[in-house]
Length: 115
Image (cartoon, rainbow, N blue to C red; front, side, top):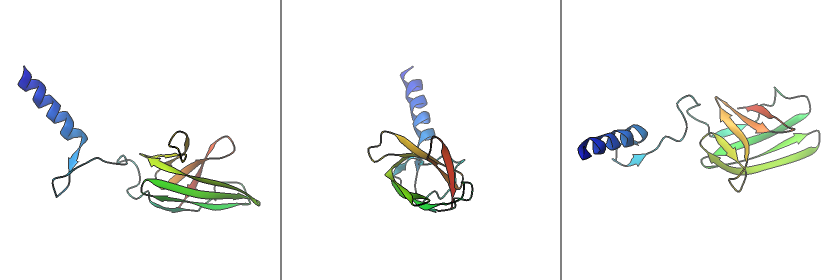
C-alpha cells in the first residue's frame, strides 16, 4: 500500500514539474494557452477611445506603465504572478496577460493594450 502511494505521489510531482537539460526542476510560469513571450512593451491603445496613449512594460517578475488620458497620467507598477499583473505589494490584481495583449484595469473595467 505504501509503495502505491509513493508511486502516485511521484507521478503527480512529475506531471506538475518538468526537468531542464541540467536536471534541475523547473515549473512552467505561464499556461500553454498564453503567448510564449509575454515580456515586452505594450503600447497599442487602438481599442480605447481617442486621446489615450502610453505603454506597459512587462519584464520577468515585474511590470510598469503609464496611461496618458488627454494629459491626465495614471502610473502603474507591480509584480507578475502567472498571468496576473499585481500591484507593487502583490495584493491587488491590476491587470492580466492574455494572448498577445495585457488587460489593464482602468475606469472600472479591463481594457486591452497590444504589442
